Image (tube, rainbow over the protein chains, first blue to last red):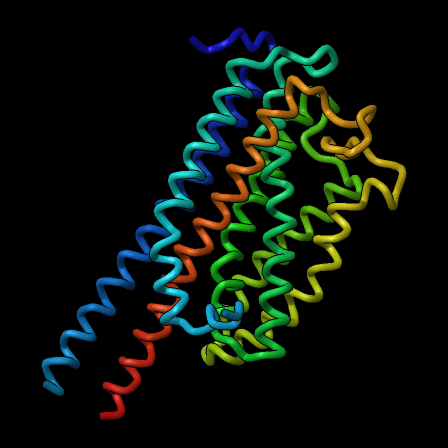
Length: 53
Length: 242
């Protein structure tokens, strides 16, 4: 399935691995931070809603 | 309807919430199709062998590293002139994405340079200005973290973004300004003689579209997080005062 990359196979594969790893890390970090802040905000809004309700 | 309506955080959250799934889906489609086409279906180049497949990562990442800084400059100027918080927060949200693209450009360039130029790194004008751009990204992110007052942080980082635009501009045009160094000229050109061969051009275009969309999707996602974080800080401050 993988094409014959000849003597540069390592060069090409490492470029793809490094790029995919960096992008995946950024996406996972962004989603994790987003979910964390969303949960914290919901908790504070509910708490303040109860206190003032 | 005016574009300034999106400076309203509530309006931005509504619109970005609707757009985000579509932009994310389109990003995935373009990246998977472009990278599959480029990696599996294009031939090796005469001069560069199979390393030509690295252009599908290196060129879009380098383009977006510079474009992300340009976007940060524009939104920073909007913040300085019109004081729209969404504008400053979107610049803050874009910085880690731009840094990641810059790192991809530097890493893939170094991996490619070793067999082609015989060195991982050279103090070539384009490479050096690109490294300085990476340092500006790090400085920009550090400055946002270092200043407690968010408006002061937005002011200071906006000035830094404008100053750093010199290096973003240089990293794009260094090859034209200094006719020296190892880095070759532009991969994409309107001049048919200079432009990359058609067989590589179409998958490259698809990958560039994928990287642009990835940037837009991540900016939307991260700006939404920044807006929520800002509201969270305001609510917690109100709670402390009560």
